[in-house]
Image (cartoon, rainbow, N blue to C red):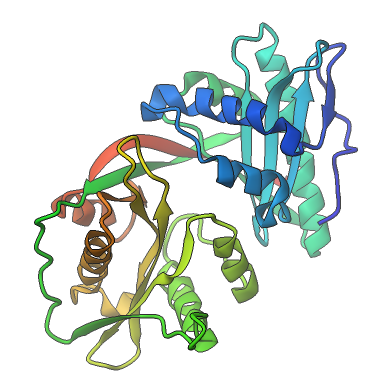
Length: 335
């Protein structure tokens, strides 16, 4: 994607901007850690993931700027992620000790809106939907978003469940079978299975909030950008050995303070025609069992608090608890 960083940014006198590089990594890690600590209870940040956003494969679909104060210090970081046709995820981290923090935020949110317009134009479409995800208790970020024309639309629960060493995983319901995606001898997945996963998710999420169609190449590339991606964390579910009924894609969570990794459920989708057959619960127990075998101590996920499937109720019944809450704030722009 072309570089749109030349778009003028209104910042306080003496401030400058530039596209971040790996030399900025320490400053960006600090910004991200300070942003999350009050709400997640931890400032632990995955340095490899941040480096991938700056200069790895994950940077290819992003437009980014850092804002530099008159003393030459990086004090803010803005990211526009071309997530799907017509949908741009935006992230903004600003040093809140600044007296001019609100002014910096206003200038960078305006820049992010321009990036969304440029991305839509490159895709040959006429509008884009900006999506920001502040912590629900982050009153400062919420004020900045409201001032920039964003509207609060949804609430998301970030949940985790412990995996106990002596845990017993129940058997699947009769008629339900679950298997990993097939692989070639070299460990690479069979393309047909990946396409089935993609198609199943697209069909499963048609009635979900903020669902945007994503092409198969975009879907696979985006998931592979994650440092926690593993091909052996993809599963397909079937009912009565017929058409695919559901799928789950997971990734590896970095080690916690105890040095133990976890598993993160990136996606779980069940075809509407197969709901109520125990498919979702079977997929979740499959990933719990996999985490148990790998010596991991937790499985985490994110769920729409207003999901039409009532997924949060299922997770709570299976032992998941909410660690923290985020929101979806939206703004539409046109080319």
